[in-house]
Length: 180
Image (cartoon, rainbow, N blue to C red; front, top):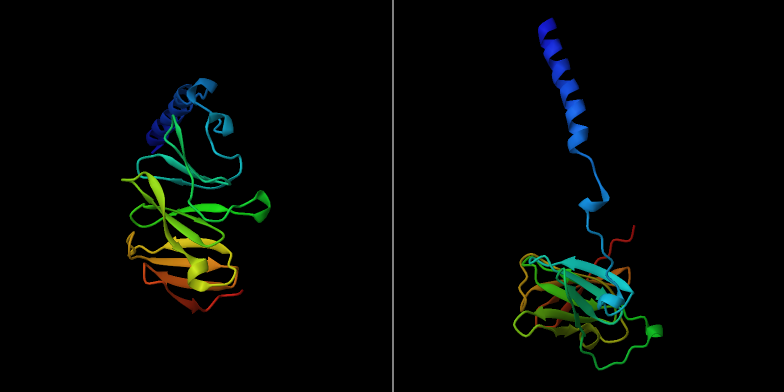
């Protein structure tokens, strides 16, 4: 038993002396860079970031959506009939579905889906036309059974009302909100 303790103590002392020499961290081990408007970002105001399956970073900004592949920034604008001023408060956010398809949506109720073939965002639905009135879209989720053309979109409008919208049928129904 005493011999076993000696072996364990010897191994621990060996590890304590060898590991710090291998684990030294220096400044040259990491590459740190700053992505900003000087590098091609469309705006300095960023609302959300999503990583695509190819490793590219999709960044939603005040002016649209940007894609950064580690070297280049590509800018995408979201088509709209309305001109938004900075005072109108248009916020663009990103989300992904179960298949890692990229969705962009704004707080005014427009939902876009990224079309890889055309390399552009296509308007999927405008909640303002479906629900009428004035809305503020806070969150968007696409369920795991959803598909790009017929999936269910879970949306959160204001803070107390959740709606469920199905694909191209423009069907909406109010769900009970949990206000706790």
